[in-house]
Image (tube, rainbow over all chains, first blue to last red; front, side):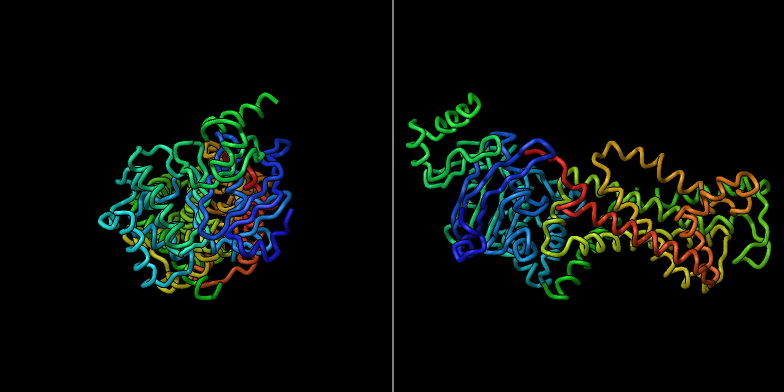
Length: 254
Length: 267
């Protein structure tokens, strides 16, 4: 396994290396490792309970990893967490907006936590809300927004401080198909246009594009990694859906 | 991370707490109604039953309403600390706590900012309560409204730190009801908030000793003396010591490596 402190690691937006973690005696992740280059879009694919949210909690240092290392733009999350966290934007699986505050107040709060100047924060908020078609809603209370709009606000919030790594944990769960597609397209454009690296956790196969890189996680272990065509070919099946079914079922049988 | 970043973060957390407080009018009213019922109803009923002798910092006989005023101020801050704790457990359950914890600043600093913001809100409540108390005829020395301020900061921080520690230890929102029974009520009733400790000593030496060890007693006494422009060094020392202790427990509790945050939130 490569050393996350090496030059190779500093060139990666995210370098997860040999991560293992357990809740008491129950293992949740076992020897997980992968890299995401700047501008890369990687899908972390896994069923519910595969370990995706645990991995997100380790990358964002909500928990400390038991074994292994995680580096974000060359900064080791365990040893130098603050510069690592500064490079990250995060959209958690659970909604994390304050319902009693307006969209603008929520985003101003986040900007303050990131140390942004007032003028810069307002300019960035207006830019990100406009890109997501939410500029007219900035003074509305979050409680009045539907779940799709709340998700857009959370994505705007995660991008305010111009992160180099964007983590999204099942961001489209519970959203209708058009909203899901809008969000997926928006995030792909961010990768292509701005070079932001993205780790997109999901259990929904139809969110994966043929060009996406996939890390298939099952029961805390990586079962396959690569672009869609490689995973399909290696599994000896016709589609990524079949590959997902086969690779996860094989492990169950074992 | 520059000092300006730290300052902006503090202002951001303070602003958020103030906005939440303004928009949750029911919370503000509840915070005032509770001690007012004690002041107007309870004190009226017990005025005759509980005679008060001349004890420091008072220089003359006082009415029961005057005696319990500092205790009710402490009650406001105690409930506010627990309200903040409940809010943090709720935020953690709902996920919004994560936004704060993944900020690129030391976790201990984020917790202190949260604590100071909660203390600020409790002080606003206390001054509103003092204003209403004045309207119903309970006066304190004019300078007392100023000299009480540092005492309110200290007691607010101590009780807020207790709430912060409890929020790190409570695993589920449902468990919070137990806090009412096992923390708030014993702390409040086993203190000098409602009756002087010599009265308690006459009834039970054991209860008296428990009251003496209760940090809430010392927070109330810090406030009581400050309200009359006096300093109770012993009470200040105990309140400060317990503040540091509770804060240390809270920081430990929220430490990702050692604390109680290590719990299953879904995989």
